[in-house]
Image 1 (tube, rainbow, N blue to C red):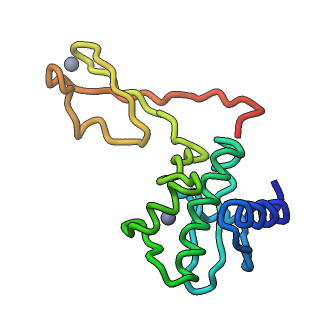
Image 2: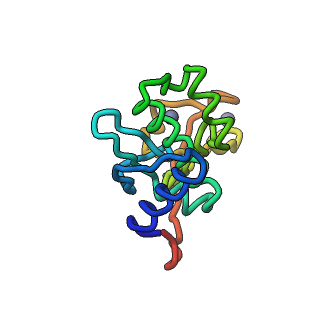
Length: 159
Ligand SMILES: [Zn+2]
Ligand SMILES: [Zn+2]
């Protein structure tokens, strides 16, 4: 989805569900990490997370837009526009906005790269970061540990 399409979508939802025009800018902000969107009280602009759309589809994005538009319109009307406010909660209910946006997954979860093997009982432990095995003992039998590196096979189409 392009910026211009997002702007148009926000304007349409604003008219259809709020009966009021959206007169500011709606953009995708790539720096938004875990949240689906946000309302900037100073500029009145809205920012959205493209990953919410990519991971959950248009329904999720529409719900987030409604949520942010509740902040937007209530703030401009000098009504209770914060999450705790009764007017905000009522606005979400009325328009079908989501209470919370679904969490967006981090683009790359760090894989396990190291395996610790107990020299006594054979118990294995996985680690994402390199550690000094001499500083640790087996949690099961207190035996000494040996570290093996796990060689990851990367697929070409990953990422
Ligand atoms: Zn909010
Ligand atoms: Zn052990």
